[in-house]
Image 1 (tube, helix red, strand yellow):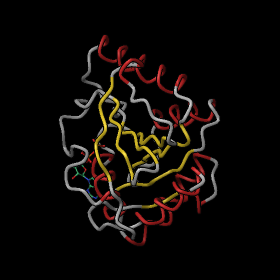
Image 2 (cartoon, protein in one colour):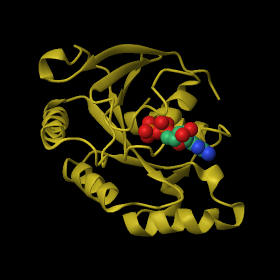
Image 3 (spheres, protein in one colour):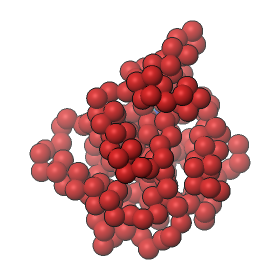
Image 4 (cartoon, protein in one colour):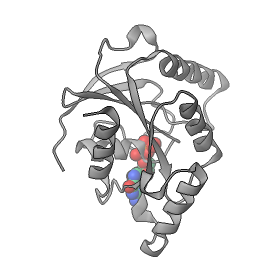
Length: 194
Ligand code: GDP
């Protein structure tokens, strides 16, 4: 796969700290612990671009990364982490709504689903939320190496059925084995028209 040139731009909590950019933005979302940081690091071939194994829910800001000077990847807080206080959750919800409602250059969403568990209620709610905005969504099934080979097809079919999407639209990846990344990369470029 082509080596991506990724660099951190900034973290933002609200509109006044969003970077002034016009490039297309692709937002990577998923439940806490789904493997989001590992996926971002594997995709960009960087060890520590995003923080792995952080206390779940700790990364509570929008993190903007420049990719090849051509598009922006956003790492947003993982959802579904029960140990956040009500006020922390509310603050995070507001930050996300403000971003998704107000950022014009959002060009797509990469929604991560754990291959072993399939979509949770939270995952389904989030995907429904993005569909309501009409954002195109790429579904990535994470940690596929943890599913025995004979059960992988069934796991992916299960995700495709629950999301009402064709099987070929579900992209299995392993950050450990570094598999499936190129396919996701091309799907992203396709989505943003590059
Ligand atoms: P995040 O909370 O969504 O950012 O998830 P992390 O990237 O921090 O990963 C959560 C845990 O899952 C860590 O212990 C990772 O090492 C592990 N993990 C992430 N991706 C993979 C993968 O593709 N395969 C396996 N086997 N483990 C993974």
